[in-house]
Length: 197
Image (cartoon, rainbow, N blue to C red; front, side, top):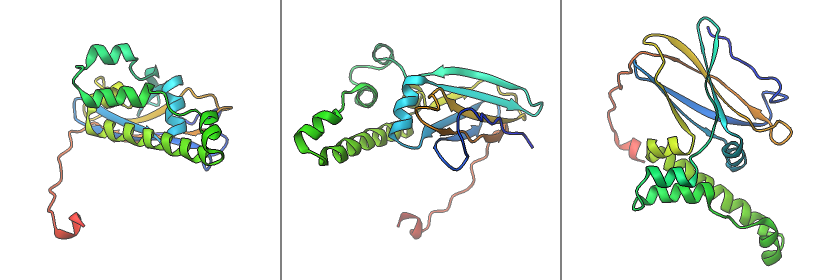
């Protein structure tokens, strides 16, 4: 078994804090990684501080595949996507759109403004996660997908996605994901009526 690289400087306990959920899919010649933080606050802060992608093989050597990976800037989004791509436009809005300020919301609606801002932030986060699921290119643009082209066939790896969020700002938990780089054979799926319910 591979040993997890535990960063004890980043969190006090494995039972408290936010995490980054990670999925790995082996393709035989590469490994696809997709991840998402738990909710708005870690997602927002990770976009500013960046993600690190760590890979460890059976030899125990840890390779840093990416350091401080961040979402595309507005200029990079405009260069990569067509102006008519409404989903790319939505990504730009989710990443860089100006939300309602807390002081502004409290000034208008009093204490209810706090909940309004929270709901707005969670909705923004939910749309971003949905867009990342719909289109891999948008997930990559939002720094929530990476393709490890250097993964060797049949090799076993452990991947860990960390953030550069200072521990004083937000406590994060990092759980590794394990994968053997063998091309997956999709399992047969028989639809029955209960599945649609």
